[in-house]
Amino acid sequence: MDILKRQRDFFDSQQTKNLAFRKKALKDLQKEIELREDAICDALYADFKKPKFETLAAETQFVLAELKLAIKNLALWARPERKSGTLLNWPSSDWIYKEPYGSVLIIAPWNYPFQLVFAPLIGAIAAGNTAVVKPSEATPNTSRIVQEIITTVFMPEHVSVVEGGVEVSQRLLSQKWDYIFFTGSTRVGKIVYESAAKHLTPVTLELGGKNPCIVDDTAAINLAAKRIVWGKFLNAGQTCIAPDYILVHSRVKDKLIEALKRSIEHSFGKSVETSPDYTRLVDEKHYNGLKAMLQGEAILYGGETNDSDNFLAPTLVNEPKVDSKLMEGEIFGPILPIIAYDNHEVIHNYITRYGKPLATYVFSTNKKFQNKIITEYGFGGGAINDTVIQITNKKLPFGGVGASGIGAYHGKSSFELFSHQKAIIKKANWLDAPLRYPPYNLPLKLIKKVKHLF
Image (cartoon, rainbow, N blue to C red; front, side, top):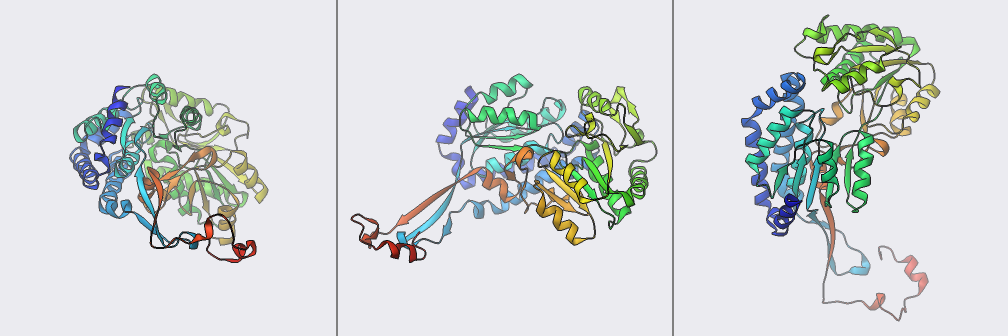
């Protein structure tokens, strides 16, 4: 693949390791995104009617915040880090050097088609790598503007965009990369992981999962409903950290359902289809898949559709069966199952059934209950008494665990993700203790007692 060879040659020239070069690239990217922000909003609206507020908040301004943080802290993040030494190596100075991997492949999804290209790319560039970006073919207008921005800002031997469908992804994955960053479904993540394993290429997989939202009988129900509706129906539920289903204590189930209905109507009006603040589903295939999930289910609210516009209204479903299509895997759309529980065993059975999710949410004022969920179950991240907000703090790493992903990024974590931590010991020559050399004369009992020898 010609572009990969060109990028390898460019990386070998050592230019990307220059901090001034990296910083200028990030600043140029910031200027170009700011210049094209309105056009980016138009592209996302053309792809799936994404409201401008959501595009600004979750796409462009999110990326600009990442850029500003990286530009401000790049020198600090990149400088060698001094570590304390051991007695065995004294006298010495011990260091960690942050080294770029080399050629990086970034495969982005369609649900946040701008943010999920540029957020990882910022980390890759800040760390000194070259990169090839594959945006999603499902959002062609956004893909086009991503191509334009990257072509304007970067030399192709530094960063390039390759557009296309599954065949293009397969061709890219057949190459030997130094690092692969993939965001998408668990099913495709397994394919990416298998391809990377052939070359022993390290990967980050940002996947998804069936994210539980637990509401106990101490929760502030009206506030919980408002925050659940926001997190679930943001981007029409096409968010990897959206609540996937609700487990609610039977004592407050009816109250929560009514509060959810009120919150939906307050957010989008009684006719959601005419709301300017509600996104459409990305394409016909995804739309039809979600409609099929609703077959035979007890719809409590919503369920309206429009085939000509890939519109599916916010939908509440009552007590779906565990083996139903709706509960097989991640929903990734505006359908919210509501399931009652009376004891912790029910919660445990649901959470453990689906593996470790990308997110878990707990609505409760009972700290003991909050801590029980946090400490007993594995998941990527989450929130207490809110949804989705864990992604907004750049000081917190974002990533999955188990079936929901490998690796974490955002802020400094992005820089660290795309940097190899190279350990270096600088040994002095003025003293050379004979203890480590044969013949070994140090008593074995003394070795076990000497602290900090290793």
